[in-house]
Amino acid sequence: MKDVTIIPFNGRQPQIHESAFVAPGCRLIGDVRIGEGASVWYNCVLRADVNYIEIGARSNIQDGSVIHCDEDHGDIRPGWPTIIGEDVLIGHMAMIHGATLHPKSFVGLGAIVMDGCEIESGGMIAAGGMLTPKKIIRAGEMWGGRPAKKMRDLTDQQQAMNLLGVGHYVENAKAHKAAVNGD
Image 1 (cartoon, rainbow, N blue to C red):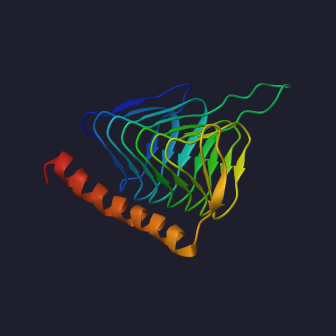
Image 2 (cartoon, rainbow, N blue to C red):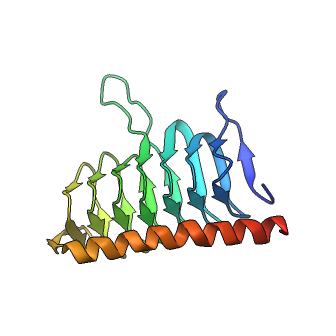
């Protein structure tokens, strides 16, 4: 991968599916697992030094996003990995920290999703929203604001539109991968 920093940490090496696209300028540290057809766009940082980060098939992490995980705190509380399911759309400049994004969930531009949070399938945090620790966005809900609160339910059509974005990024990643590789 051209101009991608890959750093093993604590005996863990990033694992990247051969069909995934990781753009130049990205930094992958430690126990990062990137699935089939997934994409990590320009200048993202995925740092899995204290737990793991998993990105499911066809999910995308858009430009400038930062993904970290939460370490185990012994008797105080367990740590949280960051688990991003299949077909998840994460907008530019998002921050995800020790959270679970279920398949087909959506994170808007510049949103923050903190420790122990979950976004269920079809759920969405709007652009600029901040989901504070341990909050759960249920399937089909849209939350926004700082701190984020439920705004409304998404229609089936709105959820379908979000999934169109996933397909777009899968195809666009193929084109960028070819351009980066000089194909």
